[in-house]
Length: 306
Image 1: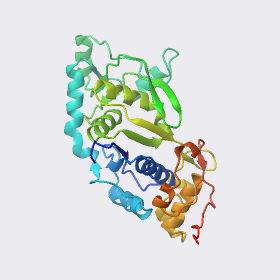
Image 2: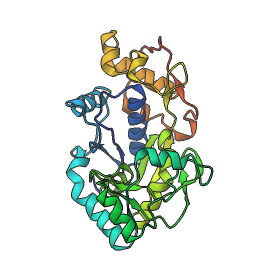
Image 3: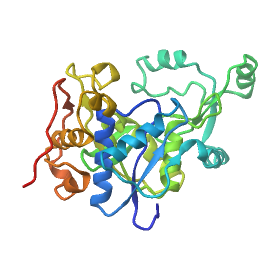
Image 4: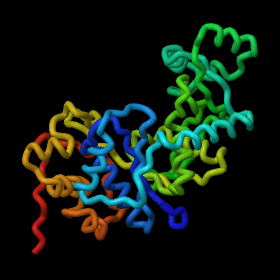
């Protein structure tokens, strides 16, 4: 992926097979990139949950739907040197501190009446040397947090417009030494020349944190587009228990990848059997702004072009 014309990406976590919501987001990321003349890459975000063989199945499913990508597939776990170098730069600038809080302590503090919901309350921000030593002696592994200089940051989303959200002292490196998602994603996007990020709108609340971190690291803030999710009939996020939600599931029911693609296109308001056919019609302005509720009997026959 070259940086000269910009690039978009799809960055799945290899924790299992992609479901229709993931596949729909991948299709949208591809459409946004290709329609703007950008390169399009795949990055496997494998710093967290990894299920053996999931990444190969994910790539095979994307290819079966007709999506293509530029350059080799990148794996986040192969980029740890870059992540740790960014953390070292922030630490040298006085922008990090060690945090000894347990998850439970953070949840209890975050539920307290002061401060915005979901924000880290800064419990460990100003510990004395003696207090830090005492916590180390307790054997608590220390996470590393950003010493944020702001409490909120505004981004511009291609589908949502201006969005202002919380920026707290979020985790950069977990207690086990693994770079945290919010750090890794910013470092990787900047290094790969990703200037367009299309992803599910469940990630919108964390985007101001990432955009702010990009500015601290001297990186350009990407153009964002957060797209509506696919929900089940109860209005909850799609999951494996919702029945035939993966490409393998649909194939087992006798549906072809072409039929699944037609279903995804239909959910976006288009009739098409192939990504390039859909690309000719694609316009972000007409995309649905509400979640797609997947009914159990949803199936679309491929359109027959005369």
